[in-house]
Length: 216
Image (cartoon, rainbow, N blue to C red; front, side, top):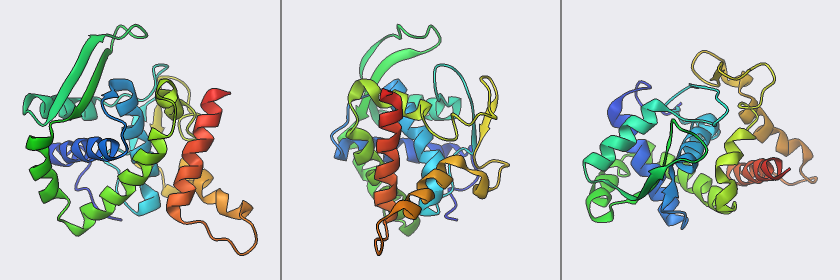
């Protein structure tokens, strides 16, 4: 596995915040809402084994509001304070009194030199490739449905995990027990004879599956 250092390391998480926003920008999906940003950050964690990347978090609390990582939020706020990320709008979230409805984009002139250094590392180039594939698939979903895609994820909806319980996909659970990864890998079994799906194709198919589930 490509180590993102120890999960919870501030620098690693802050780097991932910038990388996700950069990928979303390339996909034309910024400014992005706080809920949507947490949704794609969750999907990046749970699907990272497809690229042999260590997730920045291996578990998350399951709530009715959907994935919301305090670790990710803390480093997002730090990026804002450091001028690396711009808050383009800010208001109370009408759906949850505990969350804010903010939208974000990269502060390009400030963030790009830092991203250039990050992406110069071979392992981070792989992370960038993965996040770009995920961001383009995520951007193809209607903006009002993007946060719901995480709610349809196989790990999130696993019947053994009730609300207010921990969704563990990499912290203590073996990767073979990651439901999201297993669903993605199952696509190959239904491929036409002689067709081998790339991991990017399987990722795109999975995100579209989440879109259909969210719309159901």
